[in-house]
Length: 225
Image: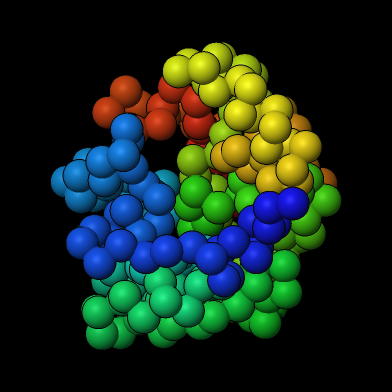
C-alpha cells in the first residue's frame, strides 16, 4: 500500500534543486509553472485578503514560501507553516517566521492572524479533517479577519479531469491503494456550508481565471470571520 498524503509530504516528497515551483508540485505537463504567472495568483490572494502593512499573515501549508515571500505588500508579521522541513528550509527571505507543523494539530492561539492563506493544500485532508481545519481557521482569525482557500479540486470536474490522457484506470487504482490521485475533491456548496457551520459570517466561492494553470478543475473560496 502506498503511503498516506501526510506520510508522503513529511518523509517522501523529493525537492527539486532547480525549481521552487517544481519542489511543491506546481507543474503542467512536467514543466514548472512560470513564476510570472504565479505572481498574479499571489496578487489575487493578497487583494482578496486585504493584506496591508498592518496585517498579521499566515501562509498555512505554505511549503517553500512562494506565496508569503512574494506578497505585493509586506505585512507586519508573516508566518509560513508546513509539514515538510526541507521545503521550509528553501525560504530565503528574511522576516518570515518558519514553523514546521501538522495542519491537523495547529499551535496558534485565538485571534492570532488577520489574514490566512491555505493554497493548494485542502486536497490532502479528508472531509472530516477539513471540518476541523475550518474551525481552527475561524478560531485563529481576528475579528473581521479573512481566509483564502485556494486551488480546491472541484468534485464536479473530477471524472472529466481523469478521462484526459487515459488517467481513469490509474485513478481508481490509486483509490484502492489508499492515496487517491490529487487527493480529496470537494463540492462547492459543501465547502460553503461547512465554512458557515464553522462560524464564518460570509463565504464567497470564486471561479478561477483562464490564465490560472488549473482553472479547468479547481476553484477558490474566501471566508470572512
